[in-house]
Length: 235
Image (cartoon, rainbow, N blue to C red; front, side, top):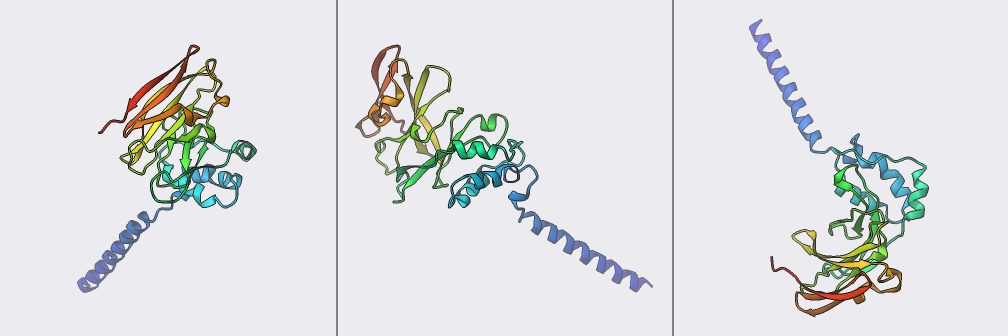
């Protein structure tokens, strides 16, 4: 009898170990697209069905990169698909931004989550190794993004983005450099639309490279124009 009890104990121990091992293995293979609070389930299908064909994998890569299952995703309904199709502006080719000899394009999408984590539309890139640029605005347009000269002379291009708060006459242009795996805003210039109509100007003409790490940027404010000199930080 004791012999049979020992055998039974060994069998139960073996089964428990197998069960725990399987559970750990399954935990490492969690499919984020199946998580209840994932934006894949809330928005993924409608986004990929609304974006032009050929970009489905790109959109899913962006969703996967910026999905946060512990945050509440923005709700999405089939009727919103018409809105996405009508407002999606497509892609703007910016050229090679990160020195890999491949052209990079920019596009923008509405927020994925509620709250401070996504407080406005964000700019994304077809090269998903490039981080997104949040805007804190709902008035993004692909033509608001323009490429600066290679200020740092490191084969990585800096960007300028015309920023609009949608309602105010006072806009701005924000300047970004790719640093430490993220886009760092290193300067801002004033843009008063009663001083200058943004539709009548080429944004790239508002920036002049003076020398390595130094640019001049044009400002429009209260019916006056002036230039500021900006020098990149060495940090």
